[in-house]
Length: 282
Figure 1 (cartoon, helix red, strand yellow):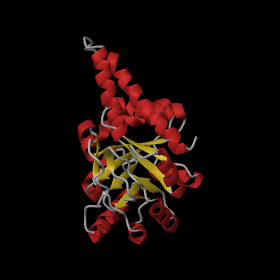
Figure 2: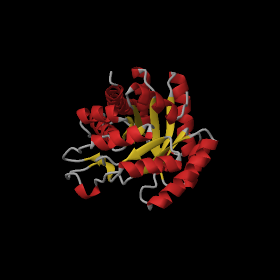
Figure 3: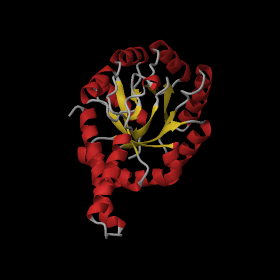
Figure 4: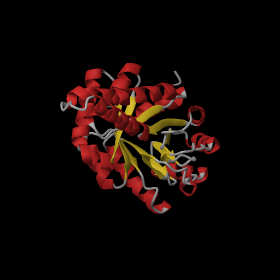
């Protein structure tokens, strides 16, 4: 069944666990994510960036997730990840997305608040939950050969975060706590105190972007501090590519996609299952 992220994350906050938010850009990834949810008997958030949605098709993606989730009997929120405009949010909602993330972090604070308010007003009229963001989260969802770019690691001011949450009325908040998109040679260091301050003062679920590559002990500490949603993309992309490469090498004469793509689906599924179990505290 399709549900809102607000519904899933409210329960997660009360229960001191987190829900995985997994990006998809192909049918194989979508199947792997949803099969992992079914096998662990846990809900998930499945999401697309604007680029991923433009590739797959907003409506095609939402319809596919709805059909598979009903077949598997699981609760799923369909989320737009890093939406940049009111127009893309409206298009996602019209296509059947149940949640949206408005990323105005590159804007001046006032402009970010103004745009987020408009998105919240529109989304709430359609019973769609909204994640807002304040504080730049750098990097890109790739495997990088370099060390962490220290100049791209920023920190959200807790007081500004609470002000932003109160002014905009967002349901979920994404901040910068030392996290960064992508995987690098060295590991990021989360500032748990920032998470804790924002969580206690705001009373709403917090989101952690750039979850790939963060050590498990830091993930557990972040969840206890108030993180309820953890985004994973890079590790899924890595598993997809490695499984596809290995499968094609082993079946280099095979040209029938449905005979070699199941191994790709399974590789994605195993990554997602591991994350779901970690986030749930099982």
